[in-house]
Amino acid sequence: MTYFSARWGRHALLPVGLVLPIFLAAPVFGAEAGHDHRMMETAQATAPVATDAVKIDNFSFEPAAIVVKAGTTVTWTNADDIPHTVVQNDKQFKSPPLDTDDHWSFIFTTPGEYYYFCSLHSRMVGTVIVQP
Image (tube, rainbow, N blue to C red):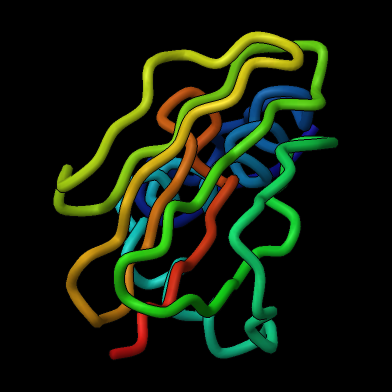
């Protein structure tokens, strides 16, 4: 049992089994709203790879950051055994759910940085850097 004396009264007791899950889950509740911040961290932490193919495997996009020239078609292929999606932050592109071995492509015509995620597993993030 854990003893709380502050707000709930001098002798209020809560079982540790109730307090610990709440404490451990607290950071998770705010995490889903922070796609933009996590995606920018991914781009900064991962050196972009020059490729036009992204493999979806083990709940991640590999490579997490790629660099292409404007006009390049990028293809995502799901190698995982569960469905995933590819969704750009501003919804400029959005794939349907991709089952195992499905692939989806998008042509990047405008230079810039495109942060994307899996709408089914929002911790999966990636970046496409499009150069002129």
